[in-house]
Amino acid sequence: MNDDQLLRYSRHILLGEIGIEGQQRLLAAHVLVIGAGGLGSPVAMYLGTAGVGTLTIVDDDTVELTNLQRQIAHSMTSLGHAKVDSAAATVHAINPEVRVVPLRERADAARLSELVAQADVVVDCCDNYATRQAVNAACVQHARPLVSGAAIGFDAQVSVYVTAQRDARDSNLPCYACVFPPDDTYTEARCATMGVFAPLVGIIGSVQAAEALKLLMGIGTSLAGQLQMLDARTME
Image (cartoon, rainbow, N blue to C red; front, side, top):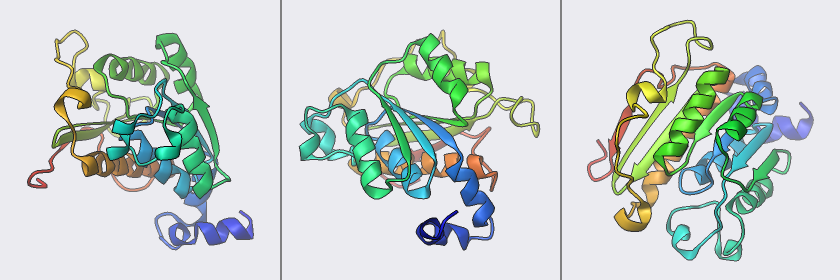
C-alpha cells in the first residue's frame, strides 16, 4: 500500500483483527452486488469506503423520485439515470481508487453464473424472490459465499449462505434454497404497495456490508447457519 492508502484506511489498519494484511485482502477483492436500491446503496457505499478493490453492481432500473426516501446512493441529480451509474458515481466520489463495474441489466441464470464465478463474495440486495433463487443457484454452482438481505415495512432479515466447499467447518450449512424452497409459493411484497421504513434498509444493508467484509478478511463469525430477523418497531 502507498502512503495515501495507509492514511485512508488507517482506522481499519489500527484494528488488530484487520491490520495491513486484512486491508490488502480487501484491496485485492471482488464483490458482486445484485441490486442498487435501498439495500444495495449502503452495501456499495460501505464496501467502497472500506477499499474493496472491485465492485460489480447489477441493476436494470432507473432512479425515480420515490426511491430517494431510502436509496441513499442516489440524489435529485440522478433522477432518470441508471441506478448502477448513479451508485458508481457515488462510490467514486468517496473513493476514486475503487474499480466499479456498473451493469445495467437483469441478469438471467447464465449471466449470473458468469458474474458469480468472477467474484469472491456475492451480496444479494434484489427485491424479488425469483432473482434471489437464481443468485443462490449460481453461488452454489461456483461455491461462492452469499450475503442475502430483505426488508419490507418494518420487518427485515439477513443471513449468510456458505457452501460446504468454501467452509469446511460445517458441511450442513444451508443455502438460500434450503431455507426458502424454490418450489414453495410466496406472495411478493413490494415497497410500492407495502411501504418500507427508510432507515431499515440502511440497517440491513450495513449488516450485509459488514458480513461481506468479514468474509473477505477471514475475521469474526459470520451469520452462516443463522437467520437474523429484525422488527424495527421495537428494535428486537
